Image 1 (tube, helix red, strand yellow):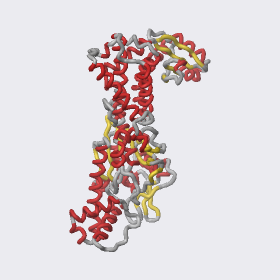
Image 2 (tube, rainbow, N blue to C red; image 1 turned 135 degrees about the horizontal axis):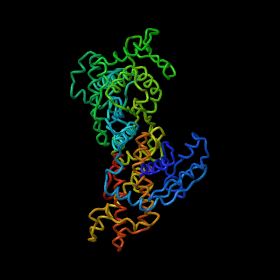
Image 3 (tube, helix red, strand yellow; image 1 turned 120 degrees about the vertical axis):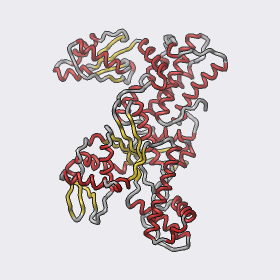
Image 4 (tube, one colour; image 1 turned 45 degrees about the horizontal axis):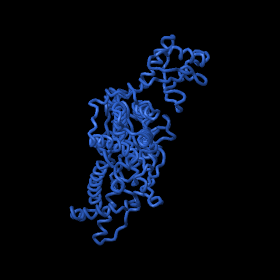
Length: 544
């Protein structure tokens, strides 16, 4: 609907002999209309004319049968008030399209890769990883809704020192269980899961302890990483998250892609040698200093493999790369963008979303978390305690780069203070209305989109219609800004508006025409609530 208004204004400007890109917004205060544009003020600067006079000319040119009135406000805002028929027509479209309402062609012909979670297979997923999973998966769903072809990828860090440390940690626990006294690695993984892995290793492959230490550690590292990865996959599936591909870091070395990427940088003059190491001259492209890519001992750094990985992603034909990283990786953003630019790619094809950690609150106290020390809350444990829906929804109630306090008691409560319960209850409440109608033998409209909506004259009813019709604009806005958290705000507002309406007005009234109109209103709200919850990876229950 918003795009139609943009076309109206564009045509009006064309009639005045003026051309500009029109931006239409929703006024925060309904007293200022249904739509507003600052086009007159934008053009006035270019034309060096009075913006308010230009706005008056625009207002006079805006002659459309669906416009009730046009007002000029402030320094040159043009505010449009639409007729009720405009809103009825739009709402009929919601009822006709159902879950397809809000589908866009914004991303038609464009491929996007969303790489998220990508937790090292050195320990179970914790709640911080879960927040990144919720953000990445919901964003992927929203981008698909907006018409993009989306690929979800998990980058498996199965090469490098952290895997070796995992093997050393398992080996040390195995030795302890065999009655041997060994020094536990200073930077080893100390969680209970390492003890469980050691116990299983002794049961499944006891012969490994007869091998020389280095060989035993290598075998335990590979085996342990694979076992942890299986658990990660299982936890993510239970969380409603799946991936199209699981890309392994070691593939980069097996195919010599790291060497190829560094050779390309060297050919471009971005690699130099210093103190026996190879350095990437990233400071020439926006980084705060140059970075080592190959240590003096010949061992590549993590940055070297990350450069090769992103070069490979860029070569795979994606128009946009979205990486969801922990906030502690913020320093990596300029390095990878610099590498892409040095390799000849547009650095803006990479967009990185940084995810802050989650503080879990139990009994009014925060739970500490440290992966290496084994003090963390597994994602699976939280999901089991409060449910997938509550975890996913609450993880998305704040922007990813803002710290989040997760209150377990609130997540388990069945009150309006619990945001996911409040939204799901709106969907279940509407289902209850239709069940009650069926129990009473009240006939339902054959096709809801053909129902006469003109009896919906209450301000609350028109308010619900208008809020529902903003859904496509929200999808477009989230796809452009990469901000899936905005959907939780919208759904809470829509649910609150419906609950308030339900508490003040009956839907199943005696008057058939009014009853069918209110049933259609409820149906449209339910359609958008259900689709919004789906985009968040949250179920839409029919009873609660």
